[in-house]
Image (cartoon, rainbow, N blue to C red; front, side, top):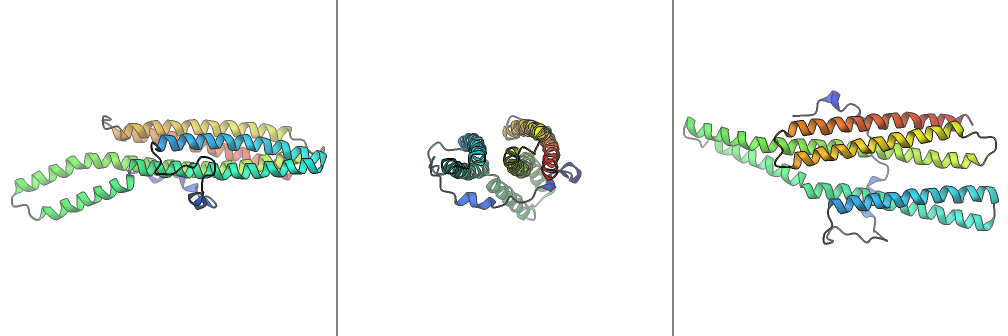
Length: 273
């Protein structure tokens, strides 16, 4: 039931997000979200993340426009507008990261993976301590059957934990690719104001990158469906749901790899300017 090393070789590419833990200290100025808020669960947290991500993308477009106008006009009014747009996109980015981390934290808290895993370890430790007290072979057989039955529950929990961990790795990888992609798009927008820079080829790579990122997100969402199957007590074969979820994540990573290749093409196009 364990993930084979060759099945997650692409996932080990993930590094820590820069300034990741800053998000935990973020105080929500617009939504005032707290973990104790009534009715606030993972679904609400994820919806908040999607909402703030859309706001970030909108502010990013406004930022590119304001910056381009300033580069062309060079007026005080345009400079002020560019400054305001820059402040807005930074605030939107912080909010998006904060809600992203909140969604992950709520997922862990809602599933109770750590607590449930600890309880499972304690169960087997307690069961082990009772084995020596068995007086007969029949008692040992009963103990064995008890552990066997409990292990079926443990397998589902293990599959759930392993898939959640893999999903976290994919999210981290996606964040890295999107962060670099965003910076490069800003740089391209700056260079586009230069008459000597032909952005047609680079613009094509940008479109291709956005398409691959969208496809990657779709595959990730599919893995969430399989996670729900594992969590469903009515699911008989959790290993099949796990393998299907892991396969979707591998597809998601493949699209991220392709997006990253296009990002490199964008970078190459900028450097040859």
